[in-house]
Length: 373
Image (cartoon, rainbow, N blue to C red):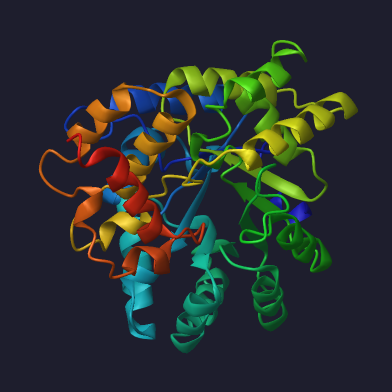
């Protein structure tokens, strides 16, 4: 991994869940404070994509990071996302647009975004990988990688066909480790087989591994003062070959906590691994919808249903009998987009990285909430 020598420590700032103001814009003051704290504590890796927060993530990074710090002070990762090109000729103009919005002359890492069996065929047809390698040769990209959401066999195929790929970003956490739909462990093993440094996304599974059921919280409480987030992130960072673990932090409290235990990182011990095994069993036995709130499903929904928010309402209702769930459901659907409005087109399921049965779950949400709202 000597070619990643400028990256400090193994903990990165994922910029998909930044602090927001009431009007939906990024809270630049709060984000600036987080950026400064992150850098002051010896970390320097930032991850974004053009579609994050409806384009606001890149803009905020320019205002709070790239306009304020010398280029050598930070590592910036961006991505080529399926929505923004249809042919090879579209890729370079989009890439140049990303550079301009972010206020930089190059990206340290540029990832082929959300690769799966279907997207990979489009990226091949449009020569996306070849274009990225050419941009790397021109000095506009330092390292070309992929972010990945599919089965291990597909990952093995991509890395076999494109051995020049330098890093792989996978979903990796203790609940998904042996999940048959995510195959975190098997994907990890494929990366190791191809000797690719691994970037971890969703170490806390979109907050699922932070807001644990009481039985699971008790298991971790018996270990000491560590938080559920700390055990989840340290679990991912403890594996050999893990180059970077990303956390999508949205406030200074999360930032201070995560930096606190990652500044002087200590791998998990045997007792902690045993506790994680217990918590995993509890979580797998729960009936929560394992949505990570990536929101890929929302953009193309013809009925404008806020799918992750409605799933969160049902999860809270199931886990905690939370009466606030009914109120929040009303808030999320006050202008339409109720779960029962789903027309079953399936666009959401085609882009879901978790491969959830979204239409089925929306029926469950509707059964729970639509009569009451």
